[in-house]
Amino acid sequence: MENHRAEEEILTVKGLSVSFTQYDRGFGRKEIQAVTDLDLRIRIGEIVAVVGASGSGKSLLAHAVMGILPYNASMSGEILFKGTPLTSGRVRRLRGRELVLVPQSVTYLDPLMKTGQQLTKGRKNPEILEKCKNILSSCGLGLEVMDKYPFQLSGGMARRVLISTAAMEDAELVIADEPTPGLDKKTAMGVMDHFRQMADRGAGVLLITHDLELAVRSADRVTVLYGGRTVEETEAFSFLDEGLLKHPYTKALCRSMPGKWPSADALENDRESGIPDEGILEYMRKEYGR
Ligand SMILES: Nc1ncnc2c1ncn2[C@@H]1O[C@H](COP(=O)(O)OP(=O)(O)OP(=O)(O)O)[C@@H](O)[C@H]1O
Ligand code: NI
Image (cartoon, rainbow, N blue to C red):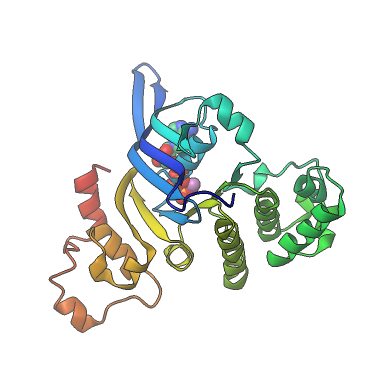
C-alpha cells in the first residue's frame, strides 16, 4: 500500500439512492426513499465521519458499500473501490479482507465460535498471535477473551472484539458503524487511535457515529446526513468555529456538543447563525419534508 498517490480515492460514492418497496394490505405498493443522491469520497489515509440522527441513512450507506442491503431494498448510483466499480462479485471477493465492516450490532459475531477463532480465522502462526495480542490490548482487552464465546462477553467487550476482528485484517477500507457506544471515553479514543494507524498505513476509514465530538476529534472530514440526504460536507476542524459551517442544521449540531453552548449574550446577538427561531427540527421538517 506504499506507492499510492496521496490523492487516490479508496471509496467513491456518487448519487447513491436507496429505496424500499412496502406492501400495504389492500393498498398495493409504496416506495420509501431512505437515501437520496448521496456523494462521499474517502482518500488514502483519510478518516471520514458520517454523522446524523437515528434513521438518517448511515447504516444503509455502509450496507450499500458492503453489498449487504436487505432483499427488499433497491439502490441506484455508483460505488467505486479504488476507482473501479464495486460489482456484487467484486464486493463478495473483497469483503472481510480488503473491505471490512465493523457492524453496528454485536450480534454479527458468530455465537458458536470462540472469539479467538473469529479473530485469527484459524491462523496459528506466531506473528498472527502477536498481532492479535497487540490489537486486543490497544482495545483494552486481555488474551483471555480469545477463549470465550460471544455470549460470555459483556456488550462493551463484544464490541471491542468486533473492532479487533476488523483490525486483524490489513483492510484498505474499514467501515465502522457506531463502533463506540458502551465504551468509556478512553477506550473509545484508543479505538480511534487504532483507526488512525490503519489510515496512516494507507487505508481509508468510514466512521459512522452519533457522537459528533468523537467525529470532530478523530476524523479528517465530516459528512452530515439528514433524512437520507447530505446536509453538509466539511473539514472536521470547521466544527471548532461555527462560522466555518454553512448549514443551520450543522450549526445547531455544533452547538449541541459538550462545552459548545454559546453564551446568552451571544445568542441575544445571534444574527449570523441562520438557525431559525422556530427551532432547527421544525425548519428541517419543512425543508426536507420529514
Ligand atoms: N429493511 C428496511 N425496510 C424498510 N425501511 C428500512 C429498512 N432498513 C432501513 N430502513 C429505513 O431507512 C432509514 C435509514 O435507516 P438506517 O439504518 O440507515 O439509519 P441510521 O442512520 O443508521 O440510524 P441509527 O443511527 O439508528 O443506526 C430509516 O428511516 C429506516 O426506517
Ligand atoms: Ni445505523
